[in-house]
Length: 111
Image (cartoon, rainbow, N blue to C red; front, top):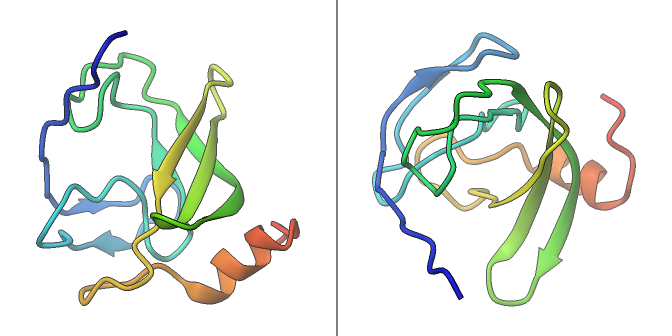
């Protein structure tokens, strides 16, 4: 069994989907926009920035997780790969949009 390696990259960025400025979380790597929940397909392992795909990752649903709160399920618009990411809805800096998380949990991702 292969162990995932985590490379902490707590950097700010401009969202490729909505264009808003996203600030670092301050405690772990932020990999998605807190405003629209979209991400980029840039990692093979969390934080390594080793994936050449660079496709936009659409948030397709949110799943409640008893250990991690909420998990956002993203699908790459370029290659179709599915990735899961912990939501940052309790972050002190730019928390994830709770209403959007709730809509995606209910299966209604229409914005």
